[in-house]
Image (tube, rainbow, N blue to C red):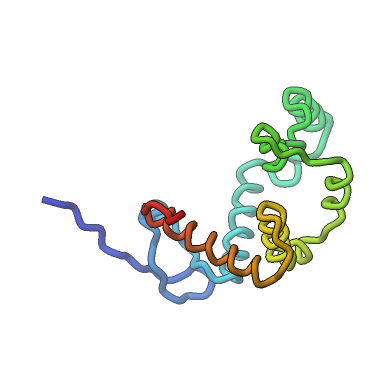
Length: 157
């Protein structure tokens, strides 16, 4: 006999529209996923946290300054976690200082717009091709290969 999970709904605590409750969250799931409701959920959580932890006093005073100082001493350079690019050095990729300094000044929207240029550059570098038609054919071949791999099939050579 199998246990069936029924989709339960409830009204959002912010907008009032009904939404499906995530079974992993259960009765604690009070807000839907709309952006305004998500902001309201975060504001509510922040208020609860401040009430529970003494409000703004949690951050004030010498004892809290010492608490933060002690934590930082136990976790040196915690904000400088290695990025994926740095971790991939083990795989043979080396991020040069020049490339690193250029990447530091690239805005997020510029990075999003350059993904296609990056793919074309990589394909050109690996295949040695510089003509757009040749690169487009190689890009299509690689995409089909990737789809085959994701479907669990052996890719064609």
